[in-house]
Amino acid sequence: MKQDILKNQTINSTLTYFAPCFQRKEPKPPGAPFSFKLEETFEMAEPCKNLGNGRVRLTYYNPDAKSVSVLGGGGEFAGEYPMTRDDWGYWTVEVDTVPGIRVHRYLVDGALVLSDQMPLVYCAQEPANAFECVDESCAWYLLQDVPHGDLRMEYYRSSHTGRWKVCWVYCPPGYDENPDKKYPVLYLQHGAGEDETGWIDMGKTNYILDNQIAAGETEPMLVVMNYGFSLREDETPALRSPGFETELLQDCIPMIESKYRVKTDRESRAMAGLSMGSAQSQSIVLNHLDMFAYLGVIIGGIGNAPIGVQAEALNDPAALNEKLKVFYACNGDHEAGCTASHEAMEKMIAEGLSCGRHDIFEGYHELTVCRKGLRAFLPLLFR
Image 1 (cartoon, one colour):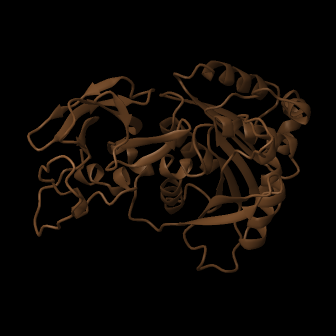
Image 2 (cartoon, one colour; image 1 turned 90 degrees about the horizontal axis):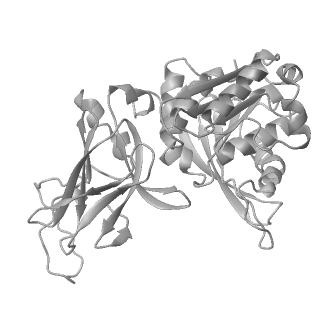
Image 3 (cartoon, helix red, strand yellow; image 1 turned 180 degrees about the horizontal axis):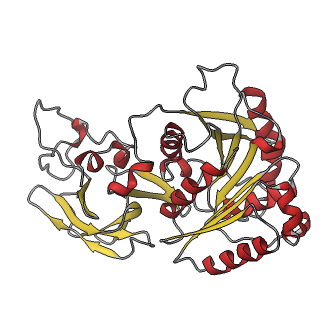
C-alpha cells in the first residue's frame, strides 16, 4: 500500500497526531502531578496506526490498569479485542477490519472509558472514540492536494423553541474569490445518534466535496448541516422532532439565503439525510415540493411512515417525477430494510419515477455506507 495513504492526515484529522504530544511517556508513580516535557528528539507512541491490508494497531496508555480491551461499536467492527501491556504501561492490539470509520470504546478494569488520545465523535447519542482504516480505495474521502472549501459556523434563533441553534456551512473553493457568483444549496441531516458535526467528523463531507469539485464530478455548492432535534421543555422527545421542520423552513433557510450568495429557486435546493435524517428529508421535501427539487434518502426506508401530502406524493410516482429532478436512496446490504427500500424504489420507477435510483453498498447501518451514498448522490445534483 502507498505510504501517502497510510499517513494521510485525514485518518487522524481531529487531533494533532504528528505533534510532540504523542511522544512516548516515561512511567510515573500513581497520583504524580501532570507534567509535559518537550524533548528535542523522541519516540512516537501513535494511538492509531494503519499497517496496511486492513490491519490497524491501537494503543492505549494506562500504566495502572490491570486489563484493557477495545470494544467495537458494531457493524464491521463488533466484539471485544483484549490488549497487551508493555513495560512502559502502553496497551496495544492489532485488529483486522475493512476500510471505513470504526467507532469504539475501551474497557479498563471493567469500566467503560474513552481515550483522550483518540478522535472523539458523537455517535449513538453519546461520545465515542473512532479510528479510520484505509487503503487505496479511500482516496476519494481523504485530504488531497486540491483547492479546499471552508467550514463555517452559523447561529440562528429557533422560532419553535426560542433558543439559539447552530449549523455548519460548507462553502466551496472559490466562494470568497467570486463575489458575483451564486450557488445552489444542499441541506444535509444527521442520524438519530449524531449531531450537526456527524457529516463532518465521521462523514468527511468537506473532503468528499473538495475532491469531487476538483475532479469536475460535482457542481460547486453550499452544504448546510443542522442539529435535527428541536424540542421545547414541555415536549416528549421523538426521533422525528416536528419542530425541526419549522426551524429549517422558517429560520435556517431564510438566514442562509440572506447571508450567503445562494440561488433561491426550488431547482437550486436539495435535501438529504441519513437514517433519522432521511425520514426528515422525505417528509420535508415531499411536503414542500415548491421549495425542493432533489431528495436523498441515505441508509433509510423509502416511504417510512408517510403522512398527508407525503403519502400522496409517493403513491403517484409519475406525478412526483414531474416535480423532482432526483430521488436518490441507498442502503447497506446488511441492513434489515435494504430489500424493502430497493423494492419500493423499483416499484416507483416502474410506475413512472424515472428520476429514482437506489444503490446497495456493502456494509451495515453506519457512516461508512453513508459516505458511499453521499459520494454517489452529489454528482447528481444541480445539473
